Structures are given as structure tokens and as C-alpha cells.
Amino acid sequence: MAPIKLENVSKSFGNVNVINDISLAVEAGELMVFLGPSGSGKSTLLRMIAGLETIDDGALMIDGVRSEKLAPGQRNVAMVFQNYALYPHMTVRDNMAFGLRNIGMSADAIAERVQEAARMLEMEELLDRRPAQLSGGQRQRVAIGRAIVKEPKAFLFDEPLSNLDAALRVRTRVELAQLHNRMKATMIYVTHDQTEAMTLADRIVVLNNCRIEQIGTPMEVYLRPASRFVAGFVGSPGMNFLKADLSGDGAHTVRINDGSVLEIDIPEVAAGQYELGIRPESVQVVRDGQAAVTTATVGVVERLGERTLLYCTLADGTELIATDSGRTEVKTGDTVPLAFDATACHLFDEAGRAFHVH
Image (cartoon, rainbow, N blue to C red):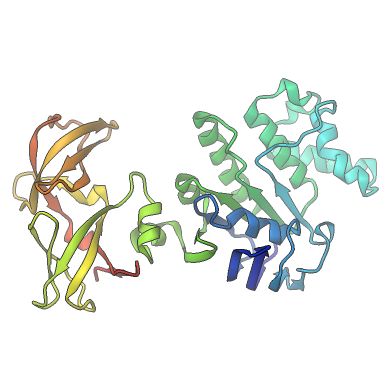
């Protein structure tokens, strides 16, 4: 286990700035996820830690050692790529042992490490097979095993599940979480999939446009997004956004798109024009005893078993997503009263800065 620290690192390709003055610290034994859309700089940042891309400015510390000038092999980190990059003519055993043989490790020590990695990944029965005889998930486990046998100070994963089908991705994600729990190793994991980030991470670094938008635990990022970008990117389905006219009457009254009025408690916000953000689970079809904020026409009913998503349209044409129970009788074309959870609202100013309900 080794901590990793980046201090004011930057990277450019020609005139294009791809990493802009980023600082962050990964704690020893932590699983940190770099999350962001394509082009946000997350894979480049990972490759800079691995030594596969140079760092133009700033410092990299791995286990307290200044490392930005070290060759990749001297940093003692292991990278697992999206492409498994296994040798097709070698067995699983030989694929995992190859790097250790290259550095002159004894045969007994190699055998011991390979066997232990195979046990940890529950693939001892696969050691004598070749990659062509394995499923995609098994090949990815071999690639992870090849990293484990190096006993690195940190593991770096670059979208390792992208090539797997949906069911296998879920199963392998669980295996990775279990592996981290067993090893307690420092891991950095890059993905554009917010479900992977939410389920795997101790902390998430949300990247956008070559900079960090927010660092926090999965639920901190989900419940208290620091910006409109984070609010819209994290969550499935995404957050609803409505125009909001905040009155000066104690800064508590919000008038949304269709003229409906909502009372919220965000005392530090001045009166003016904002965007109101609220997640679909906090917009619900009114039941007995609840007060409706507005009504909407249902366009699409999406049944997910334990809950139902309703894709609705307000009177002014604004679209939003609401939820109802899994056994709802609401159907397409119905007009339904909707209640908003005022304690789960967010306001965003023109710069995208978030203000949260207290």
C-alpha cells in the first residue's frame, strides 16, 4: 500500500492543454475512481502516474518518493488496460509469469506468486489454458493477475471492463471490489461509467474539461454535487433541471418553468434567476395527504420492477422525470399531480456553482 500525490501537474500536446494544474492525494489502500466524459483527461492523468506520458509541470509522489522523472519500470506501479494484451501462444501461467522472468526472478518465487494470484482471483483451474480458450471476463482476470504478481505499490486500471458485455461487467465489477477488500491495495480506476464509479470507489474524482470538478465519496458526489456538471453527469437517469426564479421573500420561494411555486430553504442565495436541480426519485406522483407542486402529462412509462420512471411534460413544454411505485397504474397520456421533495433541491447559478438545501 502506497499513497500517491499529484501537486499542480499539467500536460499539453502541442498547443492543446489536456491536464490543467491538477492536485490530488490518493491515500494508501484507497480505491479512487477518475470519472468523466471522453476527453476530460482522466486516462491521460492515469498514464502520467504510470510514466507512459510525461508530466510537463508539477510533482508526482509515489510512496513519498519524487517520481515524475522516473522511468515507468522504476515507479513500481502496475497498469491494467482496456485491451487485455495477452500473449495468445502462452498459457495463463506463462502470461502471468512473463514479466517476472524478464527481471530474473527465481522459478520457485515466480511459481509461488502466480499460484497465489490465481487463488486470489479464483482461477487456479485456468492456469494451463491459452487466452483463446477463455471468456472475456476470464481474460481480464488474467490481465489483473499479471499485475498482482508484480506486487506493485499501486494498481492503475484504465477502463478495464469496457470490452465486456453488461452481465459480465457487473460480475467482474463485484470481483474487483472483493479483490480490493482482500488486498487493501492502493488502486486508481478510470471510467466514464458512473455506475462503476459509484459502486467501486472509496472516493471519486470527477473530471471535466481538463480540470477537477469535485472530489468526494460516492454519496457526497451524488447528494451534494459541487457544480451543475457533476449533478448532470452523476446519476442514472440524470438530474432534472428547471428554470427557477428565486423571490426576495426570505429567499425561500422558487417559481419554476410552468409558474408553479416551491418553498425551499437555501438562505445564503440572493434573489434572482437560477436553475433548480432535483433528482427523479425526489419528484413523485402525489399520494393521499401530500401536496402537489405541479401537474404533468406522462409521455413514457418505464417499468423497472421496484420502481417506475415517468417521463413527463409540464404545461409549458418542459420535460422532467418523476418516479412512482413499481405497481403504479399510471399510463401514457395521463395527467398526474407531482410532489417535489423540497429538502432534496439544488440551485445552480449562471456559472454552474451549486447551492444546497440546508
